[in-house]
Structures are given as structure tokens and as C-alpha cells.
Image (cartoon, rainbow, N blue to C red; front, top):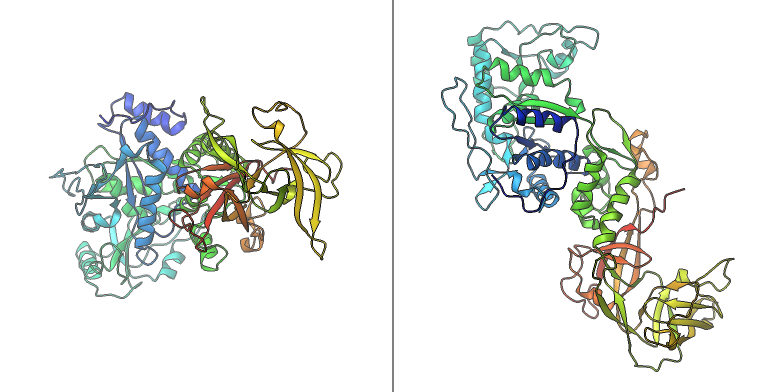
Length: 597
């Protein structure tokens, strides 16, 4: 039995977990095995995270396994790039939480749970990922799936059909109106076997023939009206190359892949409810030895201000609305990771949303609050100025450095501190100064006083402008008696602002990301591209405290009073060099919900 790397939190409760718990109590299966079966035709997104956490969570809670399996039955839309990105995203999301439940297969091996006549049972079972293992894939089972289809033909449950794709749809009928039998439905077993073999050997062009199941063209369930099992596609496959020119349909490959891998609970989203009878039909008509997998359905994640359609996400990428699949504005897991959102925040969010049988829209603020909650506890505090204006403290001699102690982690039980430099010249935020302040303005103003956080109280004595009337710098004095340890440390002022030393700071490009869409349900729009938020990205040149030169990609920071930030992958490695590329930081999320009314 696997050993938990960390004591598990109390397991969530939902109707699927209740089903699994009952099966465990009844000892229905030797081990609980779930699976996450993405199609490699795009990058994983936040909606997939719900399924990942549900499937891996159930395996984790029951000392079972969850197989990562690629549903790679459509070579025209699938690429190795997507396989690699999905594998990396899954590993990132479950790292340290449920990675010990990740089922991989030995590299190059293919599980073969049983032959169609039930004479062998050499099922490999899921194995832990390692140097000589790889994710499962439906394409690894193409030989077995072909043989299963032959068995269905022999049992009179499948036939080769010559109808065109258009005629096939027409013959299927409509809800409330029965379909009609294909004129090729009565072919003999011998004729079907011959034609199916010739489909495999490439004798026919794309679309000329298909293999269909023989069920009931009058069924009220449209998915049972002789659904397709195989279609002809003379297209190379990213995994199997040119070996095949016929490929199985998802509904056919899915249930048998589950069976071959020993999956016990096949968990899908609600759109597959009507597909479940066909899932069961395939397994039953083949007379496979028990136990058989069972399919269960739950509501997918629908999040406000977000689109999770792969087709529409691809359109955003291809039409350059975003820089790529991992653009930090995208809801893809790679985009969220690049933005600096922790995997733990995503897991906490999708777990908190729960598992139901009813579709609903989740407010995006729920997700954002989960991110803030995680980062508030974990992020190191640092000082940064996004829109700097220089402030000269005239009573501090040039070249003098006064050390101040700044808190790193105020949420820790035992907070630590670091040293920051107070010098004659500092930068403050342009928004923290107003020459003509509005009422109840407690930041810096001419003749006014504020506290520089961690340092001392300062007063603005003079505003320096250029010939055009623009402010070039501020001049003031520092009350050094209000520093820590000074006699007037408890002197009160109404405003506290952040700052950095002008001589002890680093320049950085800071990317201020916001929601990609400016309406709550962009998918409901006639043209979702028209509601792309034109202010979803602002780039500024900021001044950061010197310690941030040593930031690492895995670090998370709260720039005090500004938000949470993370180093972007495009940042230079090591400390920034004079004249070289600048550090790049992404704003993960603001401190407050700026969209709230």
C-alpha cells in the first residue's frame, strides 16, 4: 500500500465519492483505479483541473491509482506538443499531493487485460512514472481494439457501411423522429470481415466506408442509432506513424481502454450521460470477463469571465489575441502556472466548488479569492515601485546608507526580516503623491508627511518641474528620529507608502495582467472576440528592491500594497547585467478585487 507523503486533509464529500465508498465497503474491486483521458489537441485548462483533482483525489483517498491516458484517436488534430504539455501540466498540478497515485505504463509496453475469448489475463496494471515509463494512450491499444471490432462483426453486432458522412447523418433521423436502416446493414458476416480487413489495408479512400455498430435506428437515444466504430483516415499518427489508416471513434475506444487498464470508475462530464448506454453495450456484447468499468458523470466547471473551449482558445492563439497557449491571461494550466498561480490554489478552488450533477456558473471572484488566500500565506513580502517618481531626502548625505529591517513573511508564526537600504534618493509611487490632493487624501502632498514603510516619516518640502510643467522630482526631509529605535518611533501619521532606494534597486519589466474578457459569460456572445478586454495587459518599467535580483521562477512575492507577482520564464538567468535584459515579473493577482462594484 502506498505511503502518503503528507497526512491527507479530510476528504471532500460528493455523490461520486459516495459511490466509490460503497464499492470499497462491498469489496467490489481489488483496487480503485480511475483515469484522466485528455485528447492531445490543445493545452489543459482550468476546467480540466476539476476532473484531474476529482480522479486523482478519489485514487488518493482510496490508496488507488489514476491513469493518465491520452485519447489519441483523431490524428488530424493531435500533436506531440500537446502530449508533452499535458503530461507536464498534470505532473505540476498533482506534485506533492497525489503524484504517488499517477499510473504510467512501462515504456513501449501495452496492457492486454484479456483477449476477446477470455483465455488470457496478462493485464500489466498501472506503474509509477519513471525513466522507463510513459503515459497510457488509446493508440497503444489499436491492435486490441481492431480485434475487438472483428469479434463484434463475428457476433453480428457490427457492419461495414458505405453511406457518406452526410447520408449517415441524414439516415440517423432526429430527436422524436426515428432513423432508418442503412442499406448495407444486412451484409453477411463474411462480407463485413472482408471489407473491414480491406479498410485496414488501405484499399479505400477517406470517407468511402465506415464500421458501425448494429443497435437500433429507432432508439430514442440518438447515440444508440448504429454509432460509428471506425472511420478511414489516411493520416499519419503522432504515436503510431503510418501503421494505421483506420481509427476508432472515441466512444468505442474509451470504454475498451478503460477495461484494458483495469479502470473501475470512469468519471466523465454530463455531456456523456447519453453515451453511457453505448459504453455499456460495447462491454456487454463482447462478453468480457468481469469486473467491468462503470461510467459516472458530473457537471463540468463553468467559470465567469473565462472561456474553456479548446477551439476558441486556439482561435485566441492563432489570431494573436494572446502570445501563446501559456500566455498568463489564458485559463490554461500552463498560463496559470506562468502567471504565478500555485497548484495548491487551483486544487483548493476546484475542491471547494464541489462535484454536482447540475451545470452552473461559478463566479470568477471565487477562484481569485482562493489564489489570494494561498499567496497571502506563502508569498514573501518585497518592496517595488511600478510607476516611479524620485524623492530626494535632502538631510541624508549623498552616499550614506541607512539600514532598515523589513518583514519577509508576516503570516508565519516566527516572521523573519531582511535589510533594506534607505538612501538620499528614493523612488515612490507616482500615485502616492498629489500636488492638489482631493479631500481625505492621506498620502504625500506638498507640506504633508507620510511614513516610508519600515523606514521613517518624511515630509515633502518642494516639487521640482521641468519647462513643460511636468514633475521631475520631489524634495523633502526625513525625520530620522522616527526610525526603529529612535526616540519618536511612535509618532503617528495617517499615511504609509512603499518605496525603494534609487541607488540600491534593480530595473524590471512588470506585466500587469487582468481578466481577458470584460463580460461574465463571453462564450454566450455571438462573437466572443468582441468582448476581449483591451486593457488585459499593461507593461511598465518598475524599480524593485535589490534582493529581487536573486528571485527564482518558483518564488512568489507580494509587492507590498500592489499585489502578488512571480518571475516570468523569459527573465534572464542569474542577476541582471548592466545593459543586459531586465528581469520580468508577472502580476499574478491584485490585493483586492478591482472588479467589485
